[in-house]
Image (cartoon, rainbow, N blue to C red; front, side):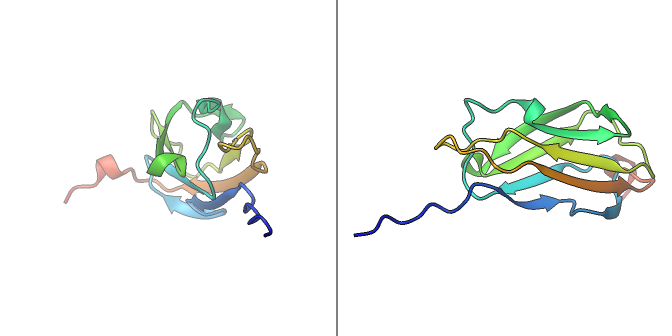
Length: 117
């Protein structure tokens, strides 16, 4: 009997999607993974968002048993400035490293905290 092949470990989805414009200035970045990460080897430096050349101060949390990473900015993102998402060094529970990921988005002028309902 042939063993079932493991699917590759990778980032399956990024929100906001690559090239998005007009996102809210305080929106999180969501990463959906094909397999749960090894939380013992995970560090917040694995997921970085850069504004121009500088990393944006942030916190990162895991959800859905390690299949979702949520990057939260600790300050408002600069509007109209292209931001770069860089993910490298992610490992799953089998020790496999996901391919590096680069994506970009540009926040608009508004933050969710500024909206009045």
